[in-house]
Length: 189
Image 1 (tube, rainbow, N blue to C red):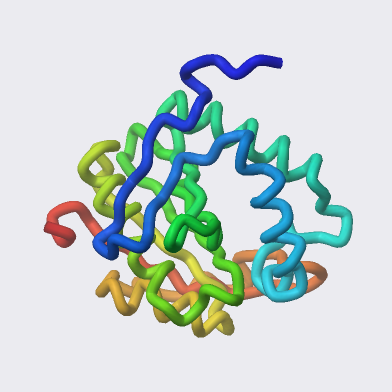
Image 2 (cartoon, rainbow, N blue to C red; image 1 turned 90 degrees about the vertical axis):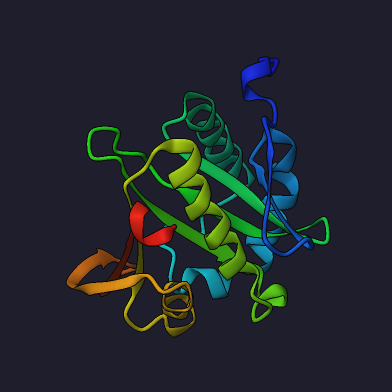
């Protein structure tokens, strides 16, 4: 299957840190993306339900194909996060609710890149893009209550904590409660 022009990497978002860039995901990313996931499988599995023992490169390929279609349609935005041109993780502006002009952000990072402010910068860039380029009014980040490192990111970005959704996520044979953070477009300016 040949990629149409609409499904080729359409753009790169530059972050406030010149070492960090967000590239719209494309099929060329699959081998490196899968290797990154596989290297971090145990760490990612702790908080991400899609990281299962069965997850393989074919799952990654299908994921990227689906995200490219969403990116091209403007119904979501999924990017790989690069630090000094090395793939460091992924971030997404999930399914955009066009009626309510709302979305949520999800992210993960390779353990060797954590603690450098990369995800905070990537989230800041994704939030600004959501408001500026997608006309969003509200953006959420939801994190498992026990995932303290992930919860620190929306707090660092001064998103408002709205509360806790009890037992709101099923994660590998257990329920997890989620902290909900949000920001509105007029609060971001």
